Length: 123
Image (tube, rainbow, N blue to C red; front, side, top):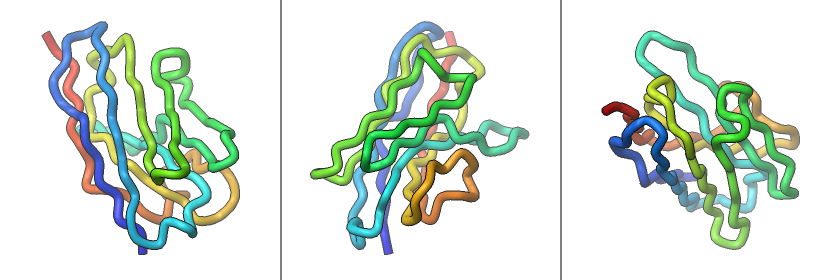
């Protein structure tokens, strides 16, 4: 079993930045990729970024060029640097991990996920 704990959410003004962190513990040797998905009220879950241990990265079109996903394999930690934030980025952000090969581009493709952290972009 893998346990994921997110941190770094909060309130930020449009155009601002936030950095999310997620530390994995437990059976971390089984993880082959980690990433983030989000869910806003009334909307479906959306994978925003995912990164394999080998460095292959996926970004949703909605965040490409604004968000950066990085991963410290030694620390079993994944980060999401979010710049140029927009009101439509407001959501609960979940850290997630996958134990099989291949990039997770849908939330269902992840095997583990955290409790989530709220990101609110507003004046």
